[in-house]
Length: 100
Image (tube, rainbow, N blue to C red; front, side, top):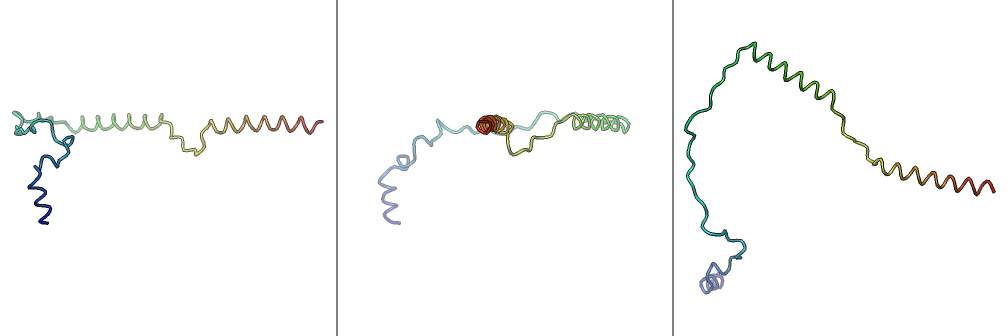
């Protein structure tokens, strides 16, 4: 511990810190100011709230109906296409050799 203190006193603490890790210039410190007014309160009637809720539910239901499910297949289509082409080539060659 004594050796560490001597090293820290011998070297300036700023020389130990990586210069790339320092903030450029002094840090910016500001005070948080409160808003000058409160948000406007909007009152809805029960009828308007019910109508808005039904419209949102209808939009969500329509969106869910038209949404396509995620492709959960583990093998991509390109792999199946390549396998089919290779199988066609092999079967063609096998048919030619068996015909002779």
